[in-house]
Length: 321
Image (cartoon, rainbow, N blue to C red; front, top):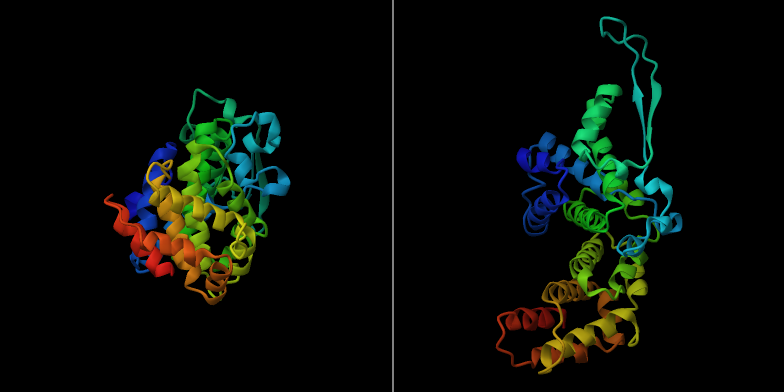
């Protein structure tokens, strides 16, 4: 686990995403992470929390859907590529011993981090640590901020950062490790931002949209379901013409009707999983009944397909039903 935790510090977001995919499976299907040695578990959860943190929200120009669109950087706040990092330092004497218990605030402010094209985030980090006495406990947080500012202006890298954020959020929820930061990580408006991502039309964003659905699915299972009503409302799950029911009918039509345009399997899998988990709670099940979802799911149950994924979707439809 120490190796996986260390790899979350990689400058290559593809490596980070590979680790997160593995941790997601651990968190959802086993109690492996919750049974880790407390120190190792905390080290991992701290890094996941940094990856999952709020970038500023839609009202500050950092809506998830906007970040997933290939927009010019002029459409984003200048802070997107600016490193502004504050930390506390304890004064020491010439021998390196701590003096009085007072602390001072130090600030690292660096604009246009994305323009530093001859260095990767780890190299930028090394130079910063040579100049600033950042406490070791803050190194990973600083690296996370450097990596995001360095990546943001690259559309491909920004998408990877969005996907990493969504995946980290899901893992934290499944590990029951989000309660201490629930208001900052699951801030007001996040549910709507996740649905905004689902509504994007770009076919190249299927993986991001599937990650958004997986995050919504994880949030359903928070203790006492504080966000369940918001999810039902934001997805329009209780209305026949709501976004979710229309999407599900489109998916089922694509799966069951010969000659229909294929529906991306990762997204379809995430969608059926979301329905199953939503239906497992009374208010979620009532919403799906009121929007006529049962009739649509019956079409899947009666679907006589030969594709390998056929049994998977039939099984999920039965469970949702």
